[in-house]
Length: 372
Ligand SMILES: Cc1cc2nc3c(=O)[nH]c(=O)nc-3n(C[C@H](O)[C@H](O)[C@H](O)COP(=O)(O)O)c2cc1C
Image (cartoon, rainbow, N blue to C red):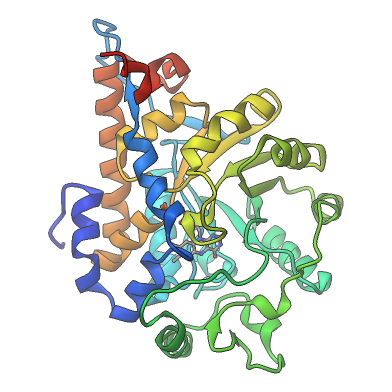
Protein backbone atom coordinates (compact mmCIF):
# COMPACT_ATOMS: atom_id res chain seq x y z
CA UNK A 1 0.00 0.00 0.00
CA UNK A 2 1.33 3.41 -0.91
CA UNK A 3 0.09 6.80 0.21
CA UNK A 4 -3.11 7.76 -1.52
CA UNK A 5 -3.24 11.33 -2.72
CA UNK A 6 -6.48 13.31 -2.72
CA UNK A 7 -6.77 14.75 -6.23
CA UNK A 8 -5.47 14.40 -9.78
CA UNK A 9 -3.69 17.73 -9.21
CA UNK A 10 -1.76 16.22 -6.29
CA UNK A 11 -0.73 13.23 -8.42
CA UNK A 12 0.32 15.64 -11.15
CA UNK A 13 2.42 17.64 -8.68
CA UNK A 14 4.52 14.63 -7.72
CA UNK A 15 4.64 13.14 -11.22
CA UNK A 16 7.91 14.80 -12.18
CA UNK A 17 9.72 13.15 -9.30
CA UNK A 18 8.32 9.72 -10.14
CA UNK A 19 9.55 9.31 -13.70
CA UNK A 20 12.79 9.97 -15.55
CA UNK A 21 13.05 13.60 -16.66
CA UNK A 22 12.99 12.49 -20.27
CA UNK A 23 9.87 10.38 -19.82
CA UNK A 24 8.27 13.35 -18.06
CA UNK A 25 9.04 15.54 -21.04
CA UNK A 26 7.47 12.96 -23.40
CA UNK A 27 4.32 12.56 -21.32
CA UNK A 28 3.49 16.16 -20.48
CA UNK A 29 4.42 17.84 -23.73
CA UNK A 30 2.11 19.38 -26.30
CA UNK A 31 2.96 20.49 -29.81
CA UNK A 32 4.45 23.78 -31.02
CA UNK A 33 3.46 26.66 -28.68
CA UNK A 34 1.23 24.36 -26.62
CA UNK A 35 -1.73 26.73 -27.08
CA UNK A 36 -4.20 23.88 -27.43
CA UNK A 37 -2.65 21.98 -24.53
CA UNK A 38 -3.21 25.00 -22.28
CA UNK A 39 -6.69 25.78 -23.62
CA UNK A 40 -7.87 22.22 -23.03
CA UNK A 41 -7.67 23.06 -19.32
CA UNK A 42 -8.57 26.73 -19.40
CA UNK A 43 -11.75 26.22 -21.41
CA UNK A 44 -13.25 24.12 -18.60
CA UNK A 45 -12.66 27.00 -16.20
CA UNK A 46 -14.71 29.32 -18.42
CA UNK A 47 -17.83 27.20 -17.95
CA UNK A 48 -20.22 27.86 -15.06
CA UNK A 49 -22.63 25.34 -13.55
CA UNK A 50 -26.24 26.42 -12.86
CA UNK A 51 -27.21 24.07 -10.02
CA UNK A 52 -30.70 22.97 -9.04
CA UNK A 53 -31.33 22.33 -5.35
CA UNK A 54 -33.69 20.17 -3.29
CA UNK A 55 -33.76 17.35 -5.84
CA UNK A 56 -33.42 14.24 -3.58
CA UNK A 57 -29.87 13.24 -4.37
CA UNK A 58 -29.76 10.57 -1.66
CA UNK A 59 -28.51 8.09 -4.27
CA UNK A 60 -26.63 8.91 -7.44
CA UNK A 61 -26.17 6.41 -10.26
CA UNK A 62 -23.13 7.04 -12.44
CA UNK A 63 -23.36 3.89 -14.55
CA UNK A 64 -23.51 4.34 -18.31
CA UNK A 65 -23.41 2.29 -21.48
CA UNK A 66 -20.89 2.53 -24.27
CA UNK A 67 -22.09 1.03 -27.54
CA UNK A 68 -24.44 -1.18 -25.60
CA UNK A 69 -21.87 -2.33 -23.02
CA UNK A 70 -22.37 -1.29 -19.41
CA UNK A 71 -19.68 0.69 -17.61
CA UNK A 72 -19.84 1.54 -13.91
CA UNK A 73 -18.49 5.04 -14.48
CA UNK A 74 -18.58 7.32 -17.54
CA UNK A 75 -14.86 7.97 -17.07
CA UNK A 76 -12.73 5.84 -19.39
CA UNK A 77 -9.06 5.52 -20.26
CA UNK A 78 -7.66 7.17 -23.39
CA UNK A 79 -4.81 5.45 -25.23
CA UNK A 80 -1.40 6.72 -24.19
CA UNK A 81 1.75 5.16 -25.57
CA UNK A 82 4.78 3.68 -23.87
CA UNK A 83 3.41 3.27 -20.38
CA UNK A 84 6.52 1.25 -19.54
CA UNK A 85 8.27 4.59 -19.00
CA UNK A 86 5.88 5.21 -16.08
CA UNK A 87 5.80 1.77 -14.48
CA UNK A 88 7.21 -1.67 -15.29
CA UNK A 89 3.72 -3.21 -15.34
CA UNK A 90 2.76 -0.60 -17.94
CA UNK A 91 -0.54 -1.20 -19.77
CA UNK A 92 -1.27 -4.36 -17.79
CA UNK A 93 -1.49 -2.32 -14.57
CA UNK A 94 -3.73 0.23 -16.27
CA UNK A 95 -6.00 -2.48 -17.67
CA UNK A 96 -6.31 -4.15 -14.27
CA UNK A 97 -7.43 -0.88 -12.69
CA UNK A 98 -9.90 -0.28 -15.54
CA UNK A 99 -11.33 -3.77 -15.11
CA UNK A 100 -11.65 -3.33 -11.35
CA UNK A 101 -13.41 0.02 -11.73
CA UNK A 102 -15.71 -1.36 -14.42
CA UNK A 103 -14.70 1.02 -17.14
CA UNK A 104 -13.43 0.98 -20.71
CA UNK A 105 -9.77 1.19 -21.67
CA UNK A 106 -8.39 1.96 -25.11
CA UNK A 107 -5.08 0.17 -25.55
CA UNK A 108 -2.60 2.41 -27.36
CA UNK A 109 -1.11 1.45 -30.68
CA UNK A 110 2.22 2.23 -29.03
CA UNK A 111 1.77 0.06 -25.97
CA UNK A 112 4.74 -1.65 -24.38
CA UNK A 113 2.58 -4.69 -23.63
CA UNK A 114 0.97 -6.63 -26.46
CA UNK A 115 -2.77 -6.65 -26.97
CA UNK A 116 -2.82 -10.39 -26.23
CA UNK A 117 -0.95 -10.01 -22.94
CA UNK A 118 -3.28 -7.25 -21.75
CA UNK A 119 -6.32 -9.42 -22.42
CA UNK A 120 -4.74 -12.47 -20.81
CA UNK A 121 -4.30 -10.48 -17.59
CA UNK A 122 -7.71 -8.77 -17.72
CA UNK A 123 -10.13 -11.05 -19.56
CA UNK A 124 -13.28 -9.31 -18.31
CA UNK A 125 -12.56 -5.64 -18.91
CA UNK A 126 -14.17 -3.65 -21.71
CA UNK A 127 -11.37 -2.90 -24.16
CA UNK A 128 -10.96 -1.17 -27.48
CA UNK A 129 -7.79 -1.39 -29.54
CA UNK A 130 -6.28 1.82 -30.88
CA UNK A 131 -5.39 1.82 -34.60
CA UNK A 132 -3.82 4.26 -37.01
CA UNK A 133 -3.99 4.22 -40.81
CA UNK A 134 -1.06 2.15 -41.95
CA UNK A 135 0.39 2.19 -45.43
CA UNK A 136 0.37 -1.56 -45.61
CA UNK A 137 -3.22 -2.63 -45.07
CA UNK A 138 -2.12 -6.16 -44.34
CA UNK A 139 -0.60 -4.78 -41.15
CA UNK A 140 -3.92 -3.21 -40.19
CA UNK A 141 -5.85 -6.32 -41.09
CA UNK A 142 -3.54 -8.51 -39.07
CA UNK A 143 -4.04 -6.24 -36.04
CA UNK A 144 -7.81 -6.31 -36.56
CA UNK A 145 -7.83 -10.12 -36.64
CA UNK A 146 -5.66 -10.25 -33.51
CA UNK A 147 -8.07 -7.87 -31.78
CA UNK A 148 -11.03 -10.02 -32.83
CA UNK A 149 -9.35 -13.22 -31.64
CA UNK A 150 -8.61 -11.56 -28.30
CA UNK A 151 -12.21 -10.38 -27.94
CA UNK A 152 -11.59 -6.65 -28.04
CA UNK A 153 -14.92 -4.85 -28.08
CA UNK A 154 -14.09 -2.10 -30.56
CA UNK A 155 -11.44 -0.38 -32.66
CA UNK A 156 -10.59 3.23 -31.85
CA UNK A 157 -9.07 4.69 -34.99
CA UNK A 158 -6.96 7.80 -34.49
CA UNK A 159 -7.35 10.21 -37.41
CA UNK A 160 -5.81 13.43 -36.08
CA UNK A 161 -2.14 12.49 -36.18
CA UNK A 162 -1.17 11.64 -39.75
CA UNK A 163 2.41 12.79 -39.38
CA UNK A 164 4.87 13.57 -36.62
CA UNK A 165 3.84 16.63 -34.58
CA UNK A 166 6.42 19.20 -33.56
CA UNK A 167 7.40 19.26 -29.92
CA UNK A 168 9.79 21.93 -28.73
CA UNK A 169 10.40 20.81 -25.17
CA UNK A 170 13.97 20.51 -24.00
CA UNK A 171 15.15 16.91 -24.14
CA UNK A 172 12.44 15.89 -26.52
CA UNK A 173 14.26 15.64 -29.80
CA UNK A 174 17.62 14.40 -28.56
CA UNK A 175 16.99 12.44 -25.40
CA UNK A 176 13.52 10.96 -25.68
CA UNK A 177 14.49 8.54 -28.47
CA UNK A 178 17.46 7.21 -26.55
CA UNK A 179 15.48 6.76 -23.38
CA UNK A 180 12.60 5.31 -25.33
CA UNK A 181 14.92 2.78 -26.92
CA UNK A 182 15.97 1.67 -23.45
CA UNK A 183 12.33 1.35 -22.38
CA UNK A 184 11.52 -0.73 -25.43
CA UNK A 185 14.53 -2.94 -24.74
CA UNK A 186 13.22 -3.46 -21.22
CA UNK A 187 9.52 -3.78 -21.92
CA UNK A 188 9.15 -4.51 -25.62
CA UNK A 189 7.03 -2.57 -28.06
CA UNK A 190 3.81 -4.44 -27.64
CA UNK A 191 1.97 -5.63 -30.69
CA UNK A 192 3.62 -3.19 -33.09
CA UNK A 193 7.11 -4.60 -32.83
CA UNK A 194 6.79 -7.30 -35.44
CA UNK A 195 5.47 -4.95 -38.11
CA UNK A 196 8.27 -2.47 -37.63
CA UNK A 197 11.13 -4.85 -38.26
CA UNK A 198 13.12 -4.17 -41.37
CA UNK A 199 12.44 -0.46 -41.79
CA UNK A 200 15.51 1.46 -42.88
CA UNK A 201 15.78 3.92 -40.05
CA UNK A 202 15.66 1.15 -37.48
CA UNK A 203 12.79 -0.91 -36.29
CA UNK A 204 11.15 1.62 -34.03
CA UNK A 205 12.40 5.11 -34.65
CA UNK A 206 12.10 7.85 -37.23
CA UNK A 207 15.05 10.22 -36.93
CA UNK A 208 15.36 8.77 -33.49
CA UNK A 209 11.84 9.80 -32.48
CA UNK A 210 9.65 7.05 -31.07
CA UNK A 211 7.00 6.57 -33.65
CA UNK A 212 5.55 4.19 -36.13
CA UNK A 213 5.52 7.04 -38.61
CA UNK A 214 7.32 5.00 -41.25
CA UNK A 215 4.39 2.74 -41.67
CA UNK A 216 1.61 5.35 -41.44
CA UNK A 217 -0.39 6.31 -44.50
CA UNK A 218 -0.37 10.05 -45.13
CA UNK A 219 -2.60 9.54 -48.14
CA UNK A 220 -5.42 8.00 -46.10
CA UNK A 221 -8.92 9.42 -46.64
CA UNK A 222 -12.39 8.54 -45.37
CA UNK A 223 -12.19 5.58 -47.71
CA UNK A 224 -9.93 4.03 -45.07
CA UNK A 225 -12.83 4.03 -42.59
CA UNK A 226 -15.14 2.49 -45.25
CA UNK A 227 -12.56 -0.19 -45.89
CA UNK A 228 -12.06 -0.91 -42.18
CA UNK A 229 -15.81 -1.17 -41.62
CA UNK A 230 -16.04 -3.63 -44.53
CA UNK A 231 -13.40 -5.88 -42.95
CA UNK A 232 -14.73 -6.33 -39.45
CA UNK A 233 -17.88 -6.47 -37.40
CA UNK A 234 -16.20 -4.70 -34.52
CA UNK A 235 -17.54 -1.19 -34.00
CA UNK A 236 -15.27 1.56 -35.30
CA UNK A 237 -14.81 4.52 -32.97
CA UNK A 238 -13.27 7.49 -34.77
CA UNK A 239 -10.91 9.43 -32.47
CA UNK A 240 -9.83 12.98 -33.25
CA UNK A 241 -12.87 14.83 -34.61
CA UNK A 242 -13.22 18.58 -33.92
CA UNK A 243 -15.75 19.83 -36.48
CA UNK A 244 -19.36 19.16 -37.44
CA UNK A 245 -18.23 18.50 -41.03
CA UNK A 246 -15.88 15.70 -40.06
CA UNK A 247 -18.29 14.32 -37.51
CA UNK A 248 -20.93 13.90 -40.24
CA UNK A 249 -18.38 12.29 -42.55
CA UNK A 250 -17.30 9.91 -39.79
CA UNK A 251 -20.86 8.70 -39.29
CA UNK A 252 -21.59 8.54 -43.03
CA UNK A 253 -18.51 6.37 -43.47
CA UNK A 254 -19.58 3.89 -40.81
CA UNK A 255 -18.28 5.11 -37.45
CA UNK A 256 -20.31 3.75 -34.54
CA UNK A 257 -19.08 6.53 -32.27
CA UNK A 258 -16.84 9.56 -32.32
CA UNK A 259 -14.32 10.88 -29.80
CA UNK A 260 -13.94 14.66 -29.82
CA UNK A 261 -10.20 14.89 -29.29
CA UNK A 262 -7.19 17.00 -30.21
CA UNK A 263 -4.76 14.33 -29.04
CA UNK A 264 -4.26 16.11 -25.74
CA UNK A 265 -2.76 19.13 -27.52
CA UNK A 266 -0.12 16.92 -29.13
CA UNK A 267 -1.25 17.10 -32.76
CA UNK A 268 -2.13 20.37 -34.57
CA UNK A 269 -1.61 23.33 -32.27
CA UNK A 270 -4.16 26.19 -32.20
CA UNK A 271 -7.15 23.94 -32.74
CA UNK A 272 -9.97 24.52 -30.22
CA UNK A 273 -10.09 23.02 -26.79
CA UNK A 274 -12.14 19.86 -27.02
CA UNK A 275 -14.86 21.14 -24.68
CA UNK A 276 -15.28 24.11 -27.05
CA UNK A 277 -15.65 21.79 -30.05
CA UNK A 278 -17.99 19.33 -28.34
CA UNK A 279 -21.30 21.25 -28.78
CA UNK A 280 -21.02 21.54 -32.58
CA UNK A 281 -20.19 17.84 -32.91
CA UNK A 282 -23.09 16.85 -30.65
CA UNK A 283 -25.44 19.11 -32.63
CA UNK A 284 -24.29 17.51 -35.88
CA UNK A 285 -24.39 13.80 -34.99
CA UNK A 286 -25.49 13.38 -31.37
CA UNK A 287 -28.84 11.94 -32.42
CA UNK A 288 -27.15 9.31 -34.64
CA UNK A 289 -24.16 7.98 -32.68
CA UNK A 290 -22.54 8.28 -29.28
CA UNK A 291 -20.12 11.16 -28.83
CA UNK A 292 -17.28 11.01 -26.31
CA UNK A 293 -14.60 13.54 -25.42
CA UNK A 294 -11.04 13.65 -24.09
CA UNK A 295 -8.51 16.40 -23.34
CA UNK A 296 -7.89 18.43 -20.21
CA UNK A 297 -10.26 16.58 -17.90
CA UNK A 298 -8.73 16.69 -14.44
CA UNK A 299 -11.62 16.51 -11.95
CA UNK A 300 -15.21 15.43 -11.53
CA UNK A 301 -16.54 18.93 -12.19
CA UNK A 302 -14.91 18.79 -15.65
CA UNK A 303 -16.58 15.43 -16.23
CA UNK A 304 -19.96 16.90 -15.27
CA UNK A 305 -19.49 19.82 -17.69
CA UNK A 306 -18.57 17.49 -20.56
CA UNK A 307 -21.59 15.26 -19.90
CA UNK A 308 -23.85 18.32 -19.71
CA UNK A 309 -22.62 19.42 -23.13
CA UNK A 310 -23.58 16.10 -24.64
CA UNK A 311 -20.69 13.66 -24.16
CA UNK A 312 -21.88 10.13 -23.38
CA UNK A 313 -18.59 9.48 -21.56
CA UNK A 314 -15.19 11.06 -21.11
CA UNK A 315 -11.69 9.65 -21.58
CA UNK A 316 -8.63 10.70 -19.62
CA UNK A 317 -5.02 10.43 -20.76
CA UNK A 318 -2.31 12.01 -18.62
CA UNK A 319 -4.07 11.59 -15.24
CA UNK A 320 -3.80 7.84 -15.74
CA UNK A 321 -0.06 8.19 -16.33
CA UNK A 322 0.26 10.23 -13.11
CA UNK A 323 -1.41 7.44 -11.14
CA UNK A 324 0.53 4.71 -12.91
CA UNK A 325 3.87 6.39 -12.20
CA UNK A 326 2.91 6.93 -8.57
CA UNK A 327 1.88 3.39 -7.66
CA UNK A 328 1.07 1.22 -10.67
CA UNK A 329 -2.36 -0.41 -10.75
CA UNK A 330 -3.25 1.03 -7.34
CA UNK A 331 -2.40 4.54 -8.50
CA UNK A 332 -4.55 4.25 -11.63
CA UNK A 333 -7.34 2.89 -9.46
CA UNK A 334 -7.04 5.87 -7.12
CA UNK A 335 -7.25 8.31 -10.02
CA UNK A 336 -10.46 6.70 -11.28
CA UNK A 337 -11.90 6.56 -7.73
CA UNK A 338 -11.12 10.25 -7.22
CA UNK A 339 -12.82 11.25 -10.47
CA UNK A 340 -15.83 9.08 -9.66
CA UNK A 341 -16.19 10.52 -6.14
CA UNK A 342 -15.88 14.05 -7.48
CA UNK A 343 -18.47 13.40 -10.18
CA UNK A 344 -20.94 12.01 -7.65
CA UNK A 345 -20.37 15.01 -5.37
CA UNK A 346 -20.88 17.42 -8.27
CA UNK A 347 -24.12 15.66 -9.20
CA UNK A 348 -25.34 15.88 -5.59
CA UNK A 349 -24.62 19.59 -5.42
CA UNK A 350 -26.05 20.28 -8.87
CA UNK A 351 -29.19 18.23 -8.24
CA UNK A 352 -28.72 15.27 -10.61
CA UNK A 353 -29.45 11.67 -9.67
CA UNK A 354 -28.47 9.96 -12.92
CA UNK A 355 -26.28 10.83 -15.87
CA UNK A 356 -29.34 11.46 -18.02
CA UNK A 357 -30.37 14.20 -15.57
CA UNK A 358 -27.23 16.15 -16.55
CA UNK A 359 -28.69 18.38 -19.26
CA UNK A 360 -27.16 21.26 -21.28
CA UNK A 361 -29.17 23.74 -19.17
CA UNK A 362 -26.82 23.02 -16.25
CA UNK A 363 -23.89 24.80 -17.90
CA UNK A 364 -23.27 28.18 -19.44
CA UNK A 365 -20.23 29.99 -20.75
CA UNK A 366 -18.95 32.53 -18.20
CA UNK A 367 -19.99 35.37 -20.55
CA UNK A 368 -23.61 34.55 -19.63
CA UNK A 369 -22.95 36.45 -16.41
CA UNK A 370 -20.99 39.27 -18.06
CA UNK A 371 -23.73 41.85 -17.47
CA UNK A 372 -23.17 41.65 -13.70
C1 LIG B 1 2.06 10.46 -23.59
C2 LIG B 1 0.87 10.38 -24.48
C3 LIG B 1 0.79 9.38 -25.45
C4 LIG B 1 -0.33 9.29 -26.27
N1 LIG B 1 -0.41 8.24 -27.16
C5 LIG B 1 -1.52 8.12 -27.93
C6 LIG B 1 -1.69 7.01 -28.80
O1 LIG B 1 -0.85 6.12 -28.86
N2 LIG B 1 -2.80 6.96 -29.57
C7 LIG B 1 -3.77 7.94 -29.51
O2 LIG B 1 -4.76 7.87 -30.22
N3 LIG B 1 -3.65 8.98 -28.67
C8 LIG B 1 -2.57 9.09 -27.87
N4 LIG B 1 -2.48 10.13 -26.99
C9 LIG B 1 -3.61 11.07 -26.86
C10 LIG B 1 -4.61 10.55 -25.81
O3 LIG B 1 -5.28 9.41 -26.25
C11 LIG B 1 -5.67 11.58 -25.46
O4 LIG B 1 -6.25 12.05 -26.65
C12 LIG B 1 -5.13 12.77 -24.65
O5 LIG B 1 -4.09 12.37 -23.80
C13 LIG B 1 -6.27 13.36 -23.81
O6 LIG B 1 -5.83 14.49 -23.14
P1 LIG B 1 -5.38 14.50 -21.58
O7 LIG B 1 -4.03 13.88 -21.52
O8 LIG B 1 -5.38 15.95 -21.26
O9 LIG B 1 -6.42 13.72 -20.80
C14 LIG B 1 -1.37 10.24 -26.15
C15 LIG B 1 -1.29 11.24 -25.18
C16 LIG B 1 -0.20 11.32 -24.34
C17 LIG B 1 -0.15 12.38 -23.28
